[in-house]
Length: 322
Image: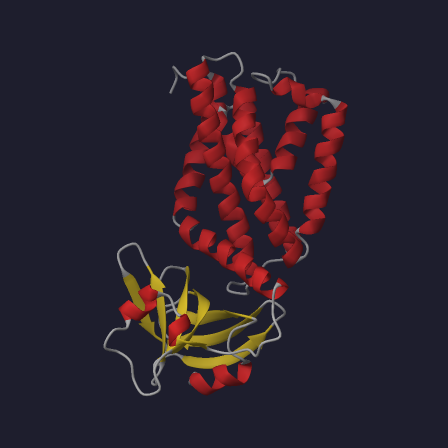
């Protein structure tokens, strides 16, 4: 690692910082050289960020993001839009950082920077979605923002002052993030579908869908397991379901006996019988309908349905309530 240029060592922490909070990262990079506490020039072409116009624009966008994330729907739209902006910004930031380095190194750095920024954004926004869905104890949004800003500033300072330490911290953060990335990405995608379903909701009655409306992979997973009345089901998301990933999406299928949750996994299809789980309540919101179930091994399990899914009365009729 001692043979690597300092600019390359600063790449990972700056890309992760940009993925977590792009505008705070740019604001810090642009403002740092103007303060009496920072004597070193910024590496590469990052010194172009100290333009007053850039600082005003970035500061305004930082305030807009801070306000948007106080409201779940606005936060979802903002983060969905930035799912494209963050990787592009991470790549451009890497090109500026590696300005003057050989072209192959610049291109490789841009690719790595974009990927790391995208990964950080997916973890951050997916975690926010899980909190919005009420699947975990939700800390106050200001506390979450303060923690994120502290991490971003810490990464940026390390990247500029002690890049080797910043790289090691980035590796630790990446290893921790990889354990939750699939679930958080699924949660984010599912939330986008919930909002889209709410926006395009028709006047049709809330209902279970018939067997002919289910995907083929759901039918194939249940061959030979159809009881009286055939199949009915609804797309759904599940958090902390026993035997399933932390957050996963699939279908809740009513077979004539207890409901079954069917979901895709890396190798084939997984199924979880919801019959042994005792339902505690149904929660109604503007964007989803949630059934809270009690599982001895994992505590509360939550199943989420879109607003066009089965009604509260229908859910109470199918699940075993305490």
